Image 1 (cartoon, rainbow, N blue to C red):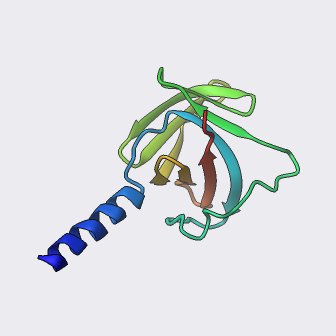
Image 2 (tube, helix red, strand yellow; image 1 turned 180 degrees about the vertical axis):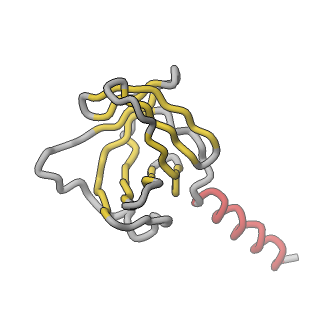
Length: 125
């Protein structure tokens, strides 16, 4: 019985700490970009800080399916682990893979010949 209770606790902790939340809405602070690679796990990234010389860059997803990235705006669609971004200034849609989305972190990667990963931290309001 003791083993069963301990197993339930371990499973609950793993479930709560995994990238299971699917709520992309809100403001996300850009932390770092990784060009040429696709990163699928945030464990080593969680202590990273924004060291950009450009200051704080924000990505905002609104509940009306619009987003703002720096001064650019557009529409988005999220289906499971895919994110389609359509900037109003571009004719093409950008397809991104969501590697991690939880209440604190967002990790997305381009789906292209030259892979790139972007790491964001949720801005608490």
